[in-house]
Image (tube, rainbow, N blue to C red; front, side, top):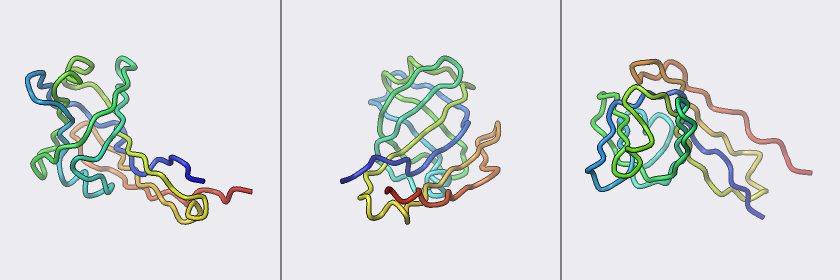
Length: 127
């Protein structure tokens, strides 16, 4: 059996742009992506702390060191610049691999700088 587990989270990032006329997706500073192990074109869930909107899209790598978090296309209708969002990637993990699965979480400040990088302890063994 496989379980869907959180693999990475960018916690409390600030939306820097919302571009309705782009083809779609979320653009994220490539340094942030590297820190948590999210890849370009990877599916992510986004939760808007300001209005409760939840959506799924895919990632585009943004300019390194820019702090960019830009929602593109239709997703731009669900955010405003300065909104605080949580970006989550998930992975399918076989039950026998759960004890070794360690998600990464980047805690962000108001400038989209990582102030803490957490590597969670492995999930408990399923009985």
